[in-house]
Length: 203
Image (cartoon, rainbow, N blue to C red; front, top):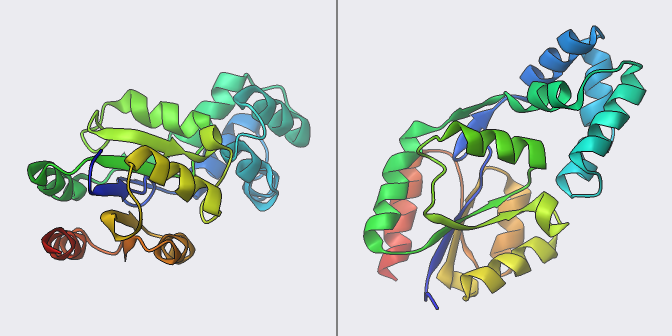
């Protein structure tokens, strides 16, 4: 078992995204207003239920069609909500630093099946085989900042407390990890993350 482990958040750390792109793309495909699409997908609890695995991709698509009163193919809906990401290439320097230390890394993300599969299909260098495990909310049935998803991460990592380093862009997710004793950094810049990891690795 490793004596240390590093977890990276996915969105706004390894990859960047904009939900408005999803709203606009789906609105265009459905020929509905962006405000209606945002209400249906994001202002309701539909996206959260999808990211928690409470609805499948097919069920998500069916509910979108029903709420928008349209008949889009599921694949078109899922592409519209997923083609919103870009790799955060500067994070590669941080990944390489952790690799060189020989410390295993994983991903801890609130995400849905469509987003994860779309990102994985891009083959971007910021999401590679060195991330094991990938603890994903839709698979675990729990979303940050709920305790359950952090417990799963500890089980996979084989360590707890300050032996785990976690970076995430959202304060509430960082706070939940800190309450478990994890070393944390609320992501703001690659250079500061790198420095925090250097300090942690020397402890």
